[in-house]
Length: 371
Image 1 (cartoon, rainbow, N blue to C red):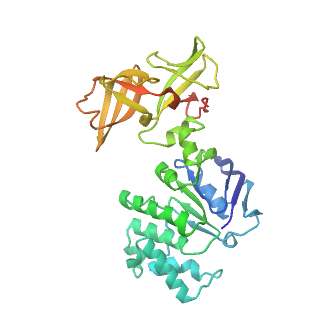
Image 2 (tube, one colour):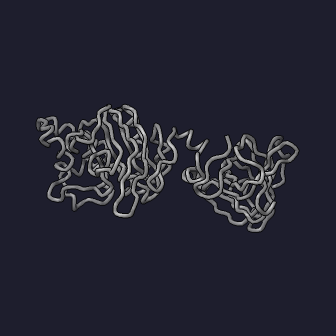
Image 3 (cartoon, rainbow, N blue to C red):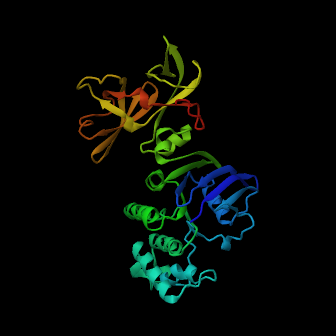
């Protein structure tokens, strides 16, 4: 195991800025997720750590040692590529065993068979060891590629979207298996690249959110969920996505209130680092809202927002209800029972706790203003 320290990485491909001052640390034995959309710079960051891409400036340290002059094959890092990169002339067994037979390791045949068998069974491909890779599905190839990484002892694992080609059911089971492996059996330093926020939240000790080659926030899953530093980070987590309403702040007899641009939504906010009259956006997660159809009393300390049903999506035992409140669309996740009998254009209300709202500056890159 080894700690990884990434400092001020910059990388351009022609006019394209791939990395723009990327910095983060991964502690010894930590599972670190790098989360972001396609083209954000995730793979370039991973390849820079592995030594496959030479950054224009900045440094990567492994175990406290500057890796700038260390060749990729001497860094003792195991990397899983999204594109599989399997050897087409070899069967499954030989593909998984290939790193164990490399000049750096050259393990005895008995140990190779034992390691390959254990890893293949763990990944559900133990019955495929004699098959050629051209006889495998994409999901099976993905697991073989992952097995080739996990089979070898390494200072750290670099995993580039290793579950992206699996179907939903297998992805869920493999996510649970990876969590068990990473946090129990191996405890090896891991940098895991993904665009799936569920993978990041469920697997990571800490998450780094990246966009356009810049790290926007690094924190524990709880921190990036509860206190996203930008509107983009807030949108990166949760389904349905957080709802945003544009508006401004006013001072109402000593109480700071948010008022939407059309005046249809007004909510008291506290601890906001902004001046009255400044344009901001209010963020509310759908699961922090309660659908109120008029039955029962309104709980103390909650705010009521009146609107009409715009869209209904029934999702098993839950229903996603999108309301139009003035000119804004706000979503809530309700139980099937609470949403029973609702139809488009029906008048309903939402209840929210002002302490659960987020205030950001204007736009996707708007910084968090509420503390």
